[in-house]
Length: 269
Image (cartoon, rainbow, N blue to C red; front, side):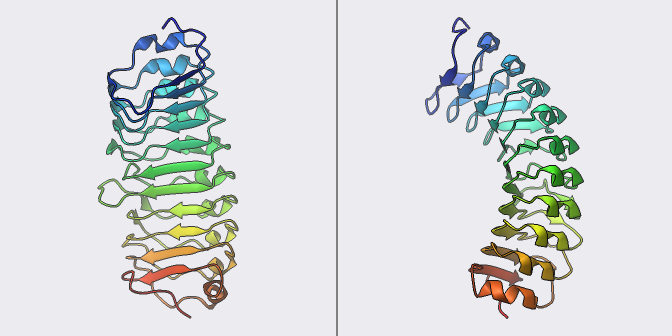
């Protein structure tokens, strides 16, 4: 608490235990906090909200528990938040929507987190990466996701988890003009693949593996995705033939394409 001029706190990959002290709030000009890969525990301190110049928060691979404090929304300079692989619980605070400069958010493998992705996510117009592996989101993907025009990576994977996305994919997903990776593996999506996916000109990887209630056919609009290299539509109820519009892609960049009941079935024209 006496290091009031400290700009970077980097103590990663040690064997530290215990809790993060509340005196953290005295580090008023701290820009980077990296405490990843330790054995720290207890709740995330609400004092994070006092760190108004904090840009990077790396607390992954510890044993933090409890909910993510709403005060995190007061750290208005945050650009990167990594809380992977802890024991966090509760819901994703709507106050994340206050972090207008946030570019990277990862909450992978926190089995206690549940609930929906708040609609306030649409306020994060600088966001480039959203990682939610390990089943941390339920409910319907909000239509506000389409406001994230800089988003490059969106992964909401739920294999082996009881917490899954449900409902239909919003057509607004086609507005993610920078999206390169879309991984929705292992959820419980319904409806059909929206034709608006064909608007994702930068998309290189699309996976809807093991969404057993996702039906319909592969939309012909996917043939517009000239950057597509990986397409996985396995373990779904999507039926029919590969649309002819995809055939030119299979002769070009699209070098992994699986469609049907299992990975035995490669796409063919």
